[in-house]
Image 1 (tube, helix red, strand yellow):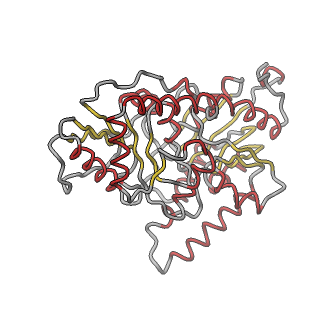
Image 2 (cartoon, rainbow, N blue to C red):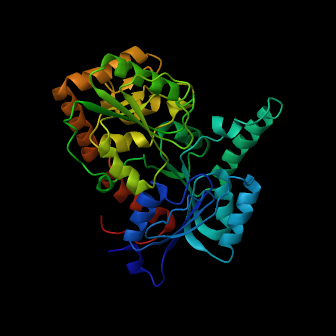
Image 3 (tube, rainbow, N blue to C red):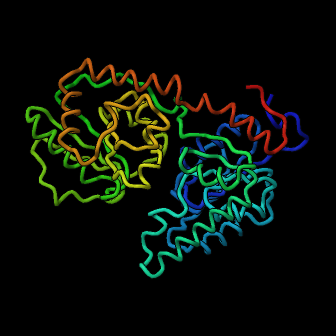
Length: 379
């Protein structure tokens, strides 16, 4: 039974997104898609237009990068004027405040810190403490206004669970729906090794470490071709001395479905971000997609990963500054095919058996029914 089959009118949900694109893997391709399949009409309003058409849901978006937060909120308010929804999913404190005007129930899906390094990056030292306090107050105010919380990660849930212990919540980590990610055979051509990094080409995200490790791998394997694919917007590698057998392939960010299809074209995934106070308490979304592709991952040893996937500890989590050790790990994957295949199989099996959206979606639907007081689908 679908939710709306027990109601005289269509149950309507809206996603009000100030920091996520309309084609976002989490909000559109998991939450909205699951709701739609269970008879709930979904709209997405986003201030981060990526010029991509959303599937199965009505999307209203604009490019708000050049606008202030107040201007983005005003534009979204005008788009939402005259509409009302049964439930709203929000991604920032400001979108929670907006949702109260247009929805009966408001859910705050907490995927980012407020305040965070990104929020405070451009503040002068004079303004910094005041902006920090303002963002703290905004988070608390969002918690007060929200009817319930959805937590994507353990550490980001802690402040809200302590401040609002009486409010309902659910944990929905960023587990992927495996139907999006094809499971293809591994590359048995050991003459070309295809590494991949996806993310900003910045110091904070460990981009120099990725380049340094790849250089070392190429220098140790001169008889092999090493290809490093960089999926990022802005890129410059002219300052690096690259071995002749190392080829850099640059790709801009791609739509979600295309990104999932391309995962199988790589042999090993790297993410060597700094292990600072904030980063180590942030759970990387792409980690689950890399594992679902059935390929090895080499990630910075983050507390958030330990908390969520204890089985991955060991050959996948590293000190990002120890580039010699990381290069050793990659060389072992290159020179020991049996070991490489075993890690590929283990990663895919972990996702298929324990860390996939199929395991989360029934509890998600029950939670929505509990908050909105509607009939539940059969799960």
